[in-house]
Length: 280
Image (cartoon, rainbow, N blue to C red; front, side, top):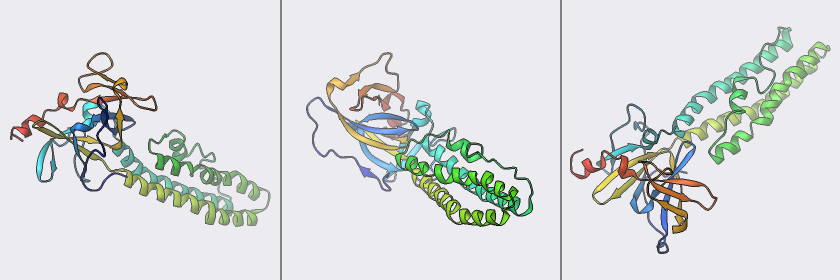
């Protein structure tokens, strides 16, 4: 869970000589590192803060002071999980209603014989097309979404089964089975949609990393903090070259063998020096 108040970043113990402490931050599907020696605070962004895009703010107000603001999404060309979750927040209620409408159409077909024209495969409805293509980068969301498959597939399987019963002259039995599924399987699916909607609201917690070096201080916009790691010298590569760019000062190899770019925030900062010099 992201902090709801500014959290000062402090060392629990001094690293071994030569070790590099790194704050890992997430930008969409990617992870980047910031030297922990530069990090002062992790602060939540206000809900209305313009964090990225053409209208991104130039300053982030922290403890009453305007700091130069860098949208790492824009600077590094990365999508934001915040935007992804915002789209999901708008989509989930629509897909929830789709399945209420689907069930109403099925009931009407059973009762009146009107042809049933909605998707019978769980992969063909709008939610199914999204569900089977989407890959979550958040463990909690991934676990919750995994619970959708069984009740969602069971709902769609009702069409062939119950309409087959109707055609076989078992309309009364089909309605009884429909009502049971509505009160159990559909109710479970509706609760999952509600839980997922609430979770994506909770996940929309962008944070600003307050960094400082010398007299320069600024705020870096990120999707969130992943971890703090200690990197021994042999797993850190510094300097420029093909593996690095203007925005990075090197690479670090984590214990899971993943390679993380180490950000050089001073290289692409335009507001830190101005703020430090008293010219916001």
